Length: 346
Image (cartoon, rainbow, N blue to C red; front, side, top):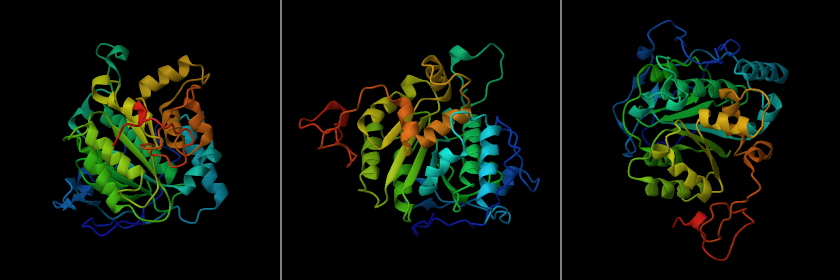
C-alpha cells in the first residue's frame, strides 16, 4: 500500500513469505530469523506522525522475498495448509478469493490493559496459566499476515496505537512485527487518532478492509470516535472506500459495551465479540457442529464485511434500519423518513 508523504518513512517492500506451513496454532514462541534478540530488530523514530499523536513508522530491512511469482496452485496449497494449521473449518482457500480485491490494514490496541488475561474470569481455573490479550492478539496478527501474504503482494499494514506503524508486512517472521510484540503492551487507547492516521496515509485504488482490535474505550470519548469513524466510511476524511471490522479483545461490557451501539449505527462497520464469547454463542446456536477455533473466529471476522456468505452468519431475521439522513451506507435500501435511534450520529 502507498502512503502520503507526511513524515512516515516507508519500509522496504521485499519481505519474505516465511515458513507458513509449520506455524504453531497458539502463535507464541516465534523467534527472529537471524536468531538475534527480537527487541533489537526494530528501530522506532522518535518523531510523531503528522502531529496526530501516533508514533511514526517502525522500520527495519526485511529478508529477501521468497514467495513472489509463486504459481497459483502452489499458493492455494500453501493457503490451505495455513488454514488447516490453525484448525479453520468454516472456510477453505477459495472462500478467501474475495480478499484479493482489498488492501488489508490493521489497527492494534497495545494499551496497558491488553496485558490482562484474555479468558473471562468465569472460564478460568485456579492457578491455570492464561494467555493475555496481548498474547492472543499476536497469535491473531501472525495468522492474518501469512494468510494475506498468499494473495496480497503489498502485504499487510499494521498501525499500533502506541508504538508506531509497520508497512508491507509479508511474513509472520518479519523482525519488525516480532520485535513490536516482544515488548509488553503499554500506553493508552488513542483509537480516534489512529483512524485519522490511517485515513491520511492510505492511498491507492483498491478499497480497504480495516480490522480494529481493541479492549477499551477510546481516548477522548466514544462520541469523538464515532464521528471519526463516520467521516472514514462516508469518505469525508479519505477518498477510499473502507469496510471496517472491530474485534473486541475482552468480554468486559464496561470496557467494550459501546461497540454494540456502533454495530447498530453503521452499515459499513461490523463488530465481533471476543473469541470466548463468540465461541459460546456459535456453539449454542448450532451454527457449527465441531469446535469453533480461534482461526474460525478470525476467518468469520475477516470475511464478514466483504462476503455475503459469511455476512449471513450473523443474520437473525431482523434487519437494521437506517434513516436517509444519517445512514453511512449509500447503497442502503432500508431508509426511513423519520430519524431513527440507530442512526443518530450527526
